[in-house]
Length: 112
Image (cartoon, rainbow, N blue to C red; front, side):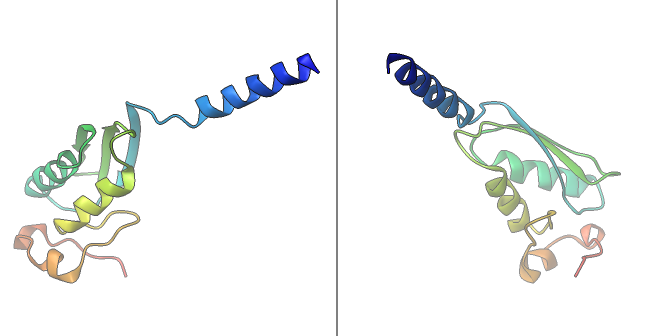
């Protein structure tokens, strides 16, 4: 009985540890854009989300690399902030209104 109790406590401890959110989680996802103006806007939008420690968008690959404190925010919140400034992500699309506010050189080809 004592061994079963010890095993149960150990399993609960491992489960709780596995569910902890990372303070420096690395994530990469696609964000549509064209130029250095887009780069500045995308990175600024990412940094506007609490917990984002690093944000670098590559103009050529359209990949945004972030380091995020998952205890303060989520990747979903970062994607929503980026969509709000007119840039589609792999999961969150900007509204037509936000997209149309972009400078003419920043108007990328949108996927349906």
